[in-house]
Image 1 (cartoon, one colour):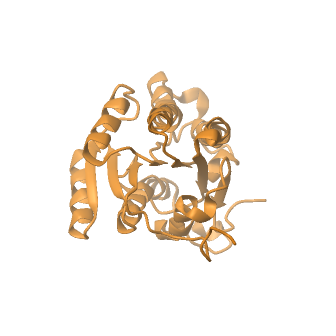
Image 2 (cartoon, helix red, strand yellow; image 1 turned 45 degrees about the vertical axis):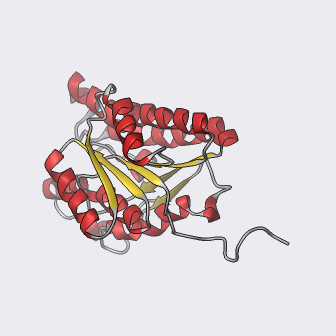
Amino acid sequence: MSDYPTPNVSNDLTGRVAFVTGTTSGLGKRFARVLAACGARVVITGRRAERLEELAQEIRDNGGECLPIQMDMTDYSQIPAAVDKAEAEFGTVDILINNAGIPDAQRAHKMSDELVDAVFGTNLIGPWKLSCEIARRLIAAEKPGRMINISSVGGFRYDGNGAALYSVTKSAIVRMTEVLAVEWSQYHINVNAIAPGAFHSEMMDGMVSRMGDFSGNFPRKRICDPEQMDSTLLYFLSPASEAVTGTYIKIDDGQGAR
């Protein structure tokens, strides 16, 4: 007889501790709401303290548990300090959503050193350091964990219209997902990625304001909503994906070329 229930699927995250970056707008804000609604105690992070407090209050008003921590992913000294705060409040973090990211929206040869450092730091180096910080603690505690890195279809396709470095970092996030999954598989830490297409977010809406509404070029002539990513997020956290690690799922509504 199998030890698994039928079906082996659950969205119940009661008792889990989730650490989500970039929660002051867009996809990260939605991820935090969903995880809290499923019972996880959620640590929300970002640079804008006022927005963090607003989201934290919303989650609490809806019956969830939440800890807001102001954090800049490019200030690497803040990363272990933030995880210390999370552990002191909720215990060992066993869910990490690496969502924080910024665009460059410039030609590669026109980017300042400061912008290059900010894009690399926010989109790649910070997530690497945060993943390793949380993995070390999970390994020491002998606990399993789940990590989801937010990439982008821009990591697989670049049309030369600016944001070249963004594309590089989002491609690297997928490779980071693959290699860390190999390293940490023996510790039962699953590392996967989601690569969204055009979804409404502060970043995407800013692009539309600069370039005009380009959704008419898509087969379904729309920009997607963050809510349409819920099932993929929860799949990677469900018992159903316990054997799934080191992979990514594109969610692009058929927008991109194949």
